[in-house]
Image 1 (cartoon, rainbow, N blue to C red):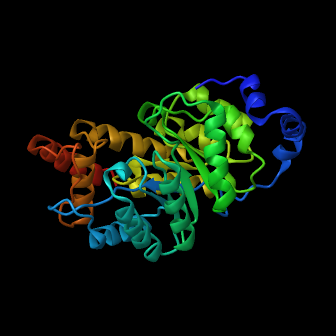
Image 2: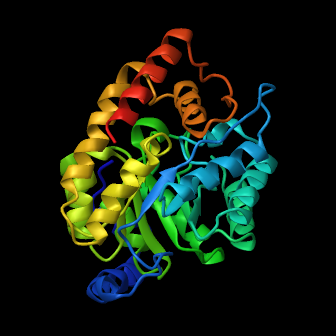
Length: 328
């Protein structure tokens, strides 16, 4: 979503705008509270398991957290898009977050408190801060498409004035309908707890632009196609495919942080994902089924409108997982 410099000046107004723009150089040098000791970490964009009655399953979620930890994830994002956040009530979302923080076992926990309305977003963000979350990933208020820059700045400013957890903006415009622009990030840059973004749009040129303009923040990629650029420029990643391919992705990050060539483990990730493509593990039902097979636990479920895994998909996933095990 494009915005002009005039839009920003129109919002801030007069002397305040001049002061903001004049201090931009200082803001760039400001040390930001990123919410983790390292930027080049691997977060799993975690699924949220439901039982057969479509109720959140805390025990299954605890098992998933232990699985992610055992297989090398540095952290998880709770209730992102892969976590089906719009499908859960506010009280359920609090419960999911509490299970995550009580069972994180050293992992970095980022939660999405975003809703279409500010009071609920604020309530969930305050709950996260009070219950051990390490950071926020805040989707823009959705439903209203193409909101003015001034409205978005006010929304995020109201939140960041009251909740001081490291805050990341969630760029997934094809789903939310509201993008995170450079002007929005620039207008919020004076907050020391502006930590970065998750870019799930996946456009390579757009991602390069983010990293180039905001190198002091953690401009995490949310798509595998930009993973090499992210690592080579000291950025992290939040990946949905990390649910099923946890260890393979963790191996990439381990190699990178050890100063080794990470391209060989990355090639393994891509080959495994190719094997699994016909099982549609990018969608909720198949992804949850594949993860349950890997963990050796009962199948978990997703809420409508997302569909169950089909028998054909199950057969494909089982076959693909056997092939992937053979890769070593």
